[in-house]
Length: 294
Image (cartoon, rainbow, N blue to C red; front, side, top):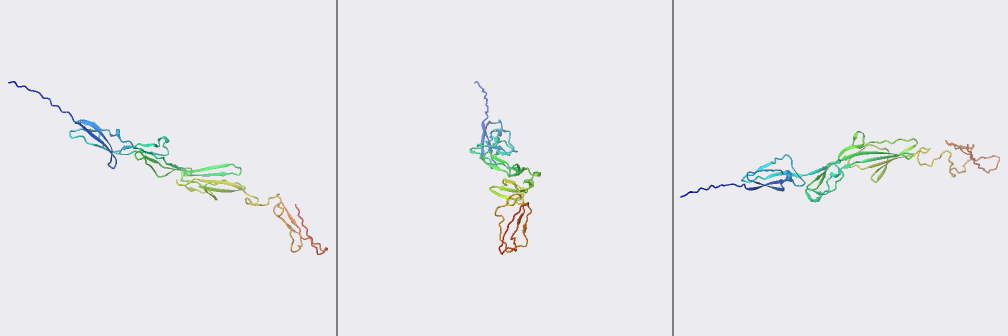
């Protein structure tokens, strides 16, 4: 009897296994799941940064393993916490970097147009001198804010307005007082326009300014002073003839003893001689008017 021995070789093939990289938001909701294949006893590299969902970013300071070990019991799931990506726009942001078009995290949505993130309330003072020349002064106060675009929802949020700079002395949030030049022989007329309303003001005072302040326009003009000290009157001017009906002769109630002489403080003398009576004549009264120019 012959005994025959056989050598049996037994080999073990590692099982294929799959692990998941699960991306979750701050509320624990699963946003995306990626599968990673491996075999038992293999070490699988983990790099969740390669496949972060569009519009999202990994929350910092997480302990995310760089590799995972595949065991016969399986592979632990890797959880990665993520949050919405945002883009913050400031007044210095180039126009080409301002988000427009489709929202990365939700292509069915479109970014809205960004509102203004700068405001510059301005008071414009225009001085028109008697010779027609103009002087323009612009007093400005600038306020700014930021706009933050959400790359998942497409929403835009704005920060509070903040004072940035101004033309005022000391860089204050105000319009400085302004005193126009006084010109001899003229009175000053100042008009202020706010919106559709125009009013006359006596001076240009300092004014506090906020982002809600509207633009103001002030116009300064000069009105010539007449010889009487007022503008626009019907005053008598030396050398100018009087109106024909300025002085009409009248009949006095009684005969004066002496001629009546009226004078004015201008180079025009009016003399009225009334009721020259000659006693030797009868009761007839004769009235003589004599005007003499000196």
